[in-house]
Amino acid sequence: MDSWNEIKTAYQVARLGTVSAAAESLGVHRATVIRHIDALEAELGRKFFQRHIRGYTPTEAGEDLLRVAQATEEQLSQWALRTRGDGIELSGELVITAVEGVTELCVPAMRAFLRKHPKTTIRLLTSTRLFKLEYGEAHIALRVGAQPQEPDNVVRPLKTLEIALYGHRTYIEQYGQPSSTADCSDHNFIGADPSVPKRTWQAWYDQNVPAKRIVFLSTSNVVIEQAVRDGIGLGMLPVHSVHGNPDMIQVMPPEQAWNVHLWAVTHRDLHRSAKVQAMLGLLSAI
Image 1: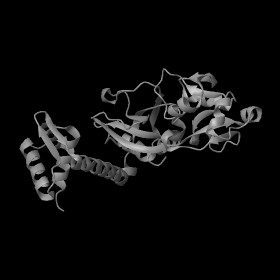
Image 2: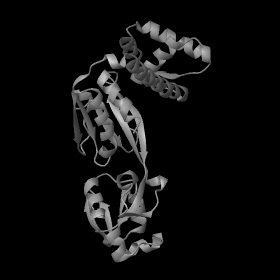
Image 3: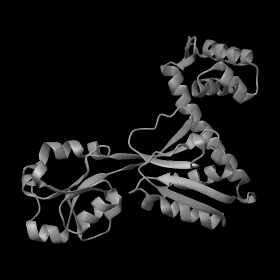
Image 4: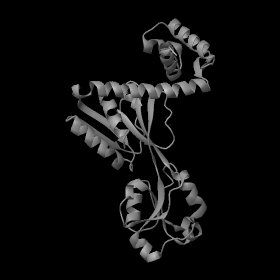
């Protein structure tokens, strides 16, 4: 297959939504964009877009092309960075936002970044507020939950975080360890305050834990974990955060429904910058 230019054009249309925006991004006339798409669809015998008055909407085949082309672009960008690699001297500030509970996973990658690029500075901002990448509030956002859908952002999956039910040794020694889900109604629990978005495990709490047994609630993941560590009650915690701690006892193993997905999000205008690519390359290995 010899249609790289056409594929690149179709990717830009799928990503940006209009022929005019794709033409501007590629530096070509809009007629060239239309010709490339028509040629690609004719060669492969598939429709990649639904045409309408406000732009082009990808079909199922177009969505598949978008996913493959985006991954390919990211890999080529990383390869180019590695090829130029050691000859680039990075400097200045790199701003990263993250929610509490994932920073300990990412700080080792940041340490490696600073060692490799000693003239840089990292600002790591932890907040429940959703920073606006389109306004330049950050270079990279580390987000959890459903895949972010902002149209001008590039989203990369980093890791799936397993969640399990834990209790501290002091709590287990005093109150015992539940032997089944039914036993949980006799134990104290740590929960998330209703003012924050529901956690992945909240449905299990609603079904199995009486409200009166949730004795401590917080908006902070860090505080929830500390409450479990202090023996106040049982609580849902990321497996990585307590791994290797013999005092933290896993009461129930992880369930798929409790999993949390971690994403790296960048704005398309900054995604290809050397600093962002260098940091993303290290984060992808966490």
